[in-house]
Image 1 (cartoon, rainbow, N blue to C red):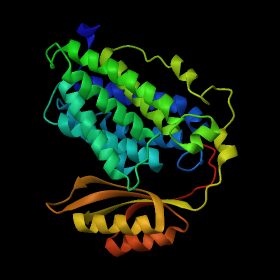
Image 2: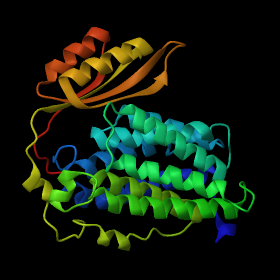
Image 3: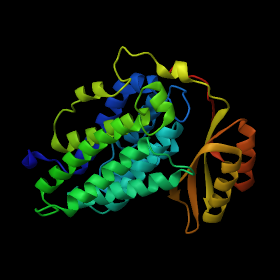
Length: 321
């Protein structure tokens, strides 16, 4: 198997394409078990639409640099990110791309560095990061990659080393998904695993399969609580969401971003802020996400710091997915 690994940009493009297809196929089930942070039944849809925006951006891009290629996808995903899950997916892709810049091939060392950076970026993007979510899967993947790399008895740049790391990442991510049900009271009460965590597992499983050139085995997903296709839409029972979700992009310096984050923390929750790209030495475009009772409570604070673009306001009532 290790002799068939594809570590080029072509495999990264294949990974993104396969992730979009699989997230689309799984979106109804993911929506059905979407309980945390609000039971609004759109996690699967948000992940799919965000991933598709990233994949569309590179569908015709020619590059030999796996990091630069993924960075373009990550930036497009960030600009079009939907919801908590989509925003964290975009942050994950952006962090993953950073250590890959300047490389034309993926190896175990680069993958481990990328996953570690993605973990740091994802956890720091949230004002109040919570275990039992996508973050748990990202952390488990990063820890498994780093630990496996540290104990390898083969060359870290070999195909065998990469294959070993991929195997451990997949296994650790799978176990992390199973664990989410016991980490959050809302999930335990509903008897389901976290929807975002399963979505992240789909993405990691597709990465492993794309590099290996194999089909992705989704049969074991049937063992996740609440994930049987005949199970009811749990979010319809659990939903008691109030307020709206506000998202936008805004250009700020570090002080402005820190100030805005603090202000949004005081008026809302589920605050996510992550840089999209730099516009100068001091300023970055930031993607902003927050849940608030009234949209203007957040938009007024945002406009005090700058002029937001790509603004969206979504009612946190139950979605049809």
